[in-house]
Amino acid sequence: MDDGLEDTDSDGFLDSVEYQEGSDPISNASIPGLEYGLTAWYPFDGNASDMSGNGRHGTTHNGAGWAAGKVGQALSLDGVDDYMDAGDFEIGGAVTFAAWVKYDAFKSWSRVFDFGNGEDIYNILMAHYQTTSSGRFSHRVTSTSTYELGGSNNLASNTWLHRVGVIEANGNMRLYLNGSLVASNTSTSVLPTLTRTQQYVGEAIGLSMAI
Image 1 (cartoon, rainbow, N blue to C red):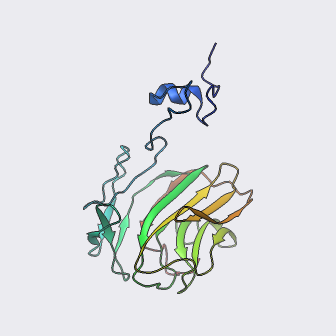
Image 2 (cartoon, rainbow, N blue to C red):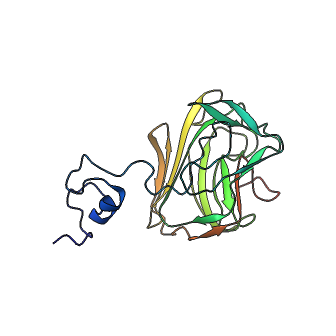
């Protein structure tokens, strides 16, 4: 008898998940779609709507607009004060953050995103180091408890880059650029599951831009 707690086809999804999502639990060629497990998805195709179905729509500020994207349109920021506020929702445990990003220039600690409850309080962020092209991905509990990965001058300007940061359920982290692994660690710090009330795309939390 299948109680739903098995992974009969060894595709990484429990049978109960496959039943729920409408895929075939006995065929590893049939798996849940890309929308499975999404917390939020912002295509930025002319608006800040969350297309995950969870209703976590963003709000743009200070003239943030739209430009040609990698696919369709993209959020366009002036590098001064434009940003999107994603609102408040719970994040924690095993997570993956992915974004297509195109830099005009590398300003000091420019954020792809910065989600937290204030400066140095449960932040999860993707940025680059100072004014260099060295990518950074980190999460922190306090200003003295930071778990970070980075590359060395691995970002390029005026081209689309696919940046991905992963935090596993056990706290291990991985950083990817254009599908290639940049860095990883075996951190034992599990990402706390909580609601972060300052969740910004293109903006740093607090006055300091430093990670």
